[in-house]
Amino acid sequence: MFDQWELGPLLEGLASGPMPAVAGLDPKLAKLARHDARGRNAAYRRSRLSLTEFGKAVLEDREDFRRHNPIRRWWGGTLLTNERL
Image 1 (cartoon, one colour):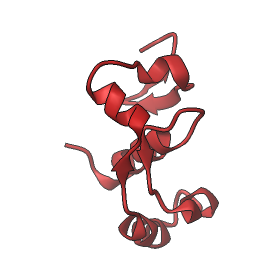
Image 2 (cartoon, helix red, strand yellow; image 1 turned 135 degrees about the vertical axis):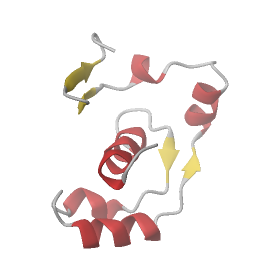
Image 3 (cartoon, rainbow, N blue to C red; image 1 turned 90 degrees about the vertical axis):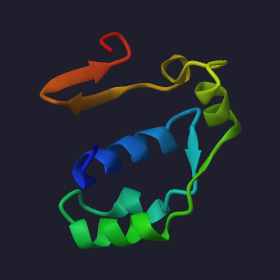
Image 4 (cartoon, rainbow, N blue to C red; image 1 turned 180 degrees about the vertical axis):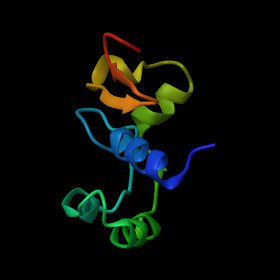
């Protein structure tokens, strides 16, 4: 199970990039500081998420998210990149 500090960056990663898998994330999130928990929580609550056509293709295993989007994030003390998943 993810907490708010893990889920937010994951959603933002799925909603940004050359081929987003998720649409509807409040664009104000990009301007809020990472430590602004109250503002970020409000922005997440305003969001109306849906899968893009690409996101549906990823879920159906017809597309590979990492082939179309750069991945670079820390998870559990490990830096994940497209080359190191």
